[in-house]
Length: 93
Image (tube, rainbow, N blue to C red; front, top):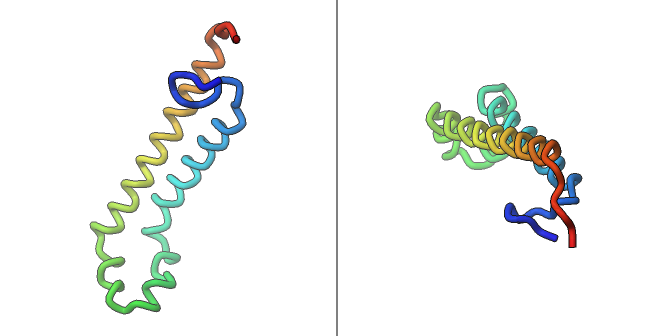
């Protein structure tokens, strides 16, 4: 049965999967724009006009900012999951 948060209370697998996905995506989005992998982008080679846009430090910072948001979501979900696990369980119907 869904809780107020919208996720079934007994379904921890999906909660843990969401946490891992958010953390992995966050780290990827933070690190990749500043690595050499960013320069070997398919779109940058295929569309020459994107070269100046994708090399712009503001764009790279924006992508890294999205990574920080993903990390924040992952950590808050992990904190919520750990608090829910330590609180006494509610009655089930």
